[in-house]
Length: 508
Length: 125
Image 1 (cartoon, rainbow over the protein chains, first blue to last red):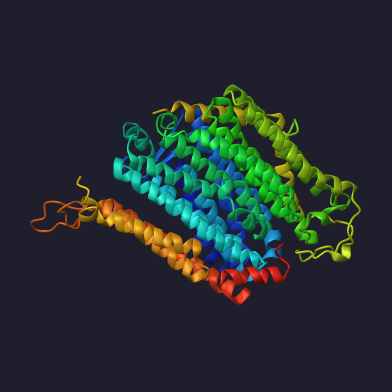
Image 2: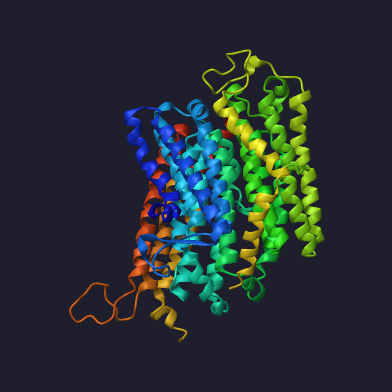
């Protein structure tokens, strides 16, 4: 069947076309924009599920755009690694799109809703494009598409600081993307190809060349900026703290994960572990950077008074885990790292969605004001508690699973100090999450008169203080999955194992 | 390669490095938001120059069928950079839109004054 063969390109094209159609659809009926965004993300999710199933059954899927053969034409590739990431990204997109309706109407002026959903779809299309493309110049283009969409989404926040946060992100994001473009140029100069698979065949004999080394340097700095690896994370806390809540949720859950995916792709598929052994000990550098990120992110998170900013700094630490696991370059650690892409997306997504609910109902952003909310919003705060426990790494939650694999991988690699880093950062995470959980349930609540709800209904109904179900449901689903995948680990672990094997064995 | 070839034949790359550094400096060090964007454009233009220089073949002409043309420049980097130019234009447009809104919100486009104003409103520690 022709249509099934076109699934890889449809995953990207559906949200991309929807982004263009939304302003037109809104002329017909005002809320069509929302439904179109929801339908397009759902379609992408279903398509990526089919793709992942296809990959698990038949192996690598390759799609030739316009029917041009790969080294010359653009190729879309789905393998174990990006099939997995595609499902994660599109699933989060569906949940957040569903959640958007009430939340975003409360947080941004209604005149801008059309532009908002357009930009949202553009972001999803960009992220899915980064993941699925097998062409390195295409990677740059999709990175810029998703970045441009995130700049607008962040700037759509009500607070004025959202504008400066978005501007700073634009400057740093452009530096990062331009570095990636320079890296692409250097690679093209020596190899004459842009196809990733082709590059991985041609590069090994050129490893001695300074041009390749320069390209590698540009890639590593550019991608580290994009995924907010520790010393290059400065744009992130402001951006996450000032963006509307659903935007923070989708950026935290998918955008940096896709950055991490791109880093893995370039480090292991385009370059190979051999490059590390023969030219620059980049993995050792990444282990150090990752460890510093894990600890620094947690310490900085403890110092925050604003809940969103705290979650953002905690993301800096969690990205450290992903990089750390990849840098240890053995099967177990790599599995942990890949699992953490899914797990952190679920945990951090759930936490940001909870914050969105709290903002909708009460307008609270300061951590100190959260106390006593456990009695008023039991379901929401239950979701928060589950996700927080998962962040700490309590057994039976997803956080434990990825940390377990990371620690085992560290022992396998003989890096016992990484285990110490993981344990120490878990303790630090417990410090900044547990004080919140404790004050939620045992604190004396603040006066409701001081609330400034973002939602139109706000605190109006005294009986039902939970958020509307359209916001509550995605939050509970994400928090619930933190537990489900913490117990039924076999499915994600199986996929992650295969992806890890593929990345490590491809010492082409 | 003689030591002077950097100045005789490789000069576009030399120029690209100087231009990129100028732009990069302006992006990082300038205080005025518009000047940062000017720096960003210089930086990106440097990269365009790098790609265009890369596609040049000695003695080649534009990749169009001319009478008597025997060698052509590599068209691919030129096409790639066309895409990058579009990206750069869009980024600049988004940046300008943001600057307009920043000016409306804070009444200035000098970074230090914006920080000052935020501090006054108690939004920064």
